[in-house]
Amino acid sequence: MFNVGGNNVYPEEVIRLVKSNPQIEHADMSGIQNDIQCHKITLHVKLKNDSEENREVIKLWCKENTSQYKILKIVFID
View (cartoon, helix red, strand yellow):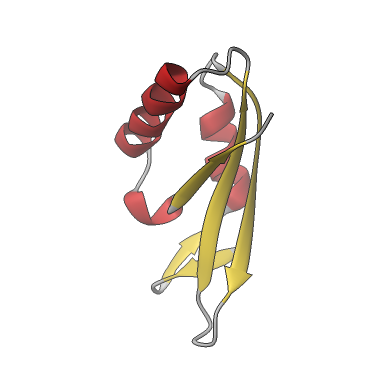
């Protein structure tokens, strides 16, 4: 579990949601704890058909389908 601004974020919940998108092949999360007991979360995503257009679609889809504090940064992996 990650703490983001006093909110609990459960990686399993976010990853399950993200993987429900048929364009996503793999997803994982990492969190780095800062000095005030909060985490900076990064979502790592591998797309089935990687392109800049698909990346923008996924970013928008994530914003529409989960709370903004749950996904602060998205990194696309090859």
